[in-house]
Amino acid sequence: MPTGDIVRVRTRGTLLGQKVEFGVHLRYQTAAANAEDLAASWTATIMPLVLAATSLDCNWDQIVVSDTSPTGLESVVLPLTQPNPGTVIGDSLPPQDAAVISLRTGSKGGRKRGRFYLPGLSENYQNDGQMSGAQLTAVQALANGIVTAYGAGGSETAYRLVVYSPEVLTFPAPKPKKPRPGTVITDVTSYVVSPVIRTQRRRSIGLGA
Image 1: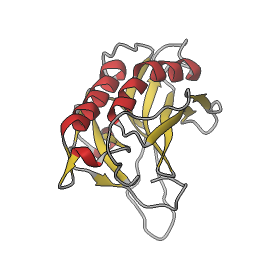
Image 2 (image 1 turned 45 degrees about the vertical axis):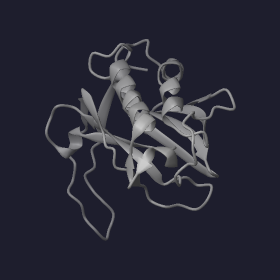
Image 3 (image 1 turned 120 degrees about the vertical axis):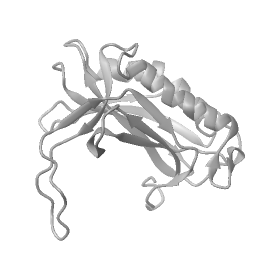
């Protein structure tokens, strides 16, 4: 794919009968960069950290790399060797409970800040709705690993972690929103892991949280 193209990398799995996932955006830095290579890079570099940060009940199935352009290439799916569960012990919290990892770019503005939700939290490492102990440390290590590999100046030089805010000029009725003129793509330079456990929107069993 051409240098500068943006893709979304999604890590997908299942947890207590629900489909779960988390994702980030990356920009191709070289002409040789491609979805197959990125999926393999993510599997080798990031998946060990994902397993260390998520519960035994959370099984990770595949990596999906999707072009953000509506006229781009089709998505690439890399199945992961099965079974592929997390390693954090203890009963899992409900699938809609997740850790929030915020992505920072060093610039002001909502369009230059990002975040993702990590499922697979354990009862053993939460106290009054906050992560603690080994799982908090492992989630911090995951966030650090992603930024170290793909953030500004990261070791994976063909790919760069970004906050991607596409242009949106109109919204459907009934509630108009503020237009977002122009696409904004900003390199991620740091992260913040909140210890507060958040709740994502509910869905039916089997459709994810």
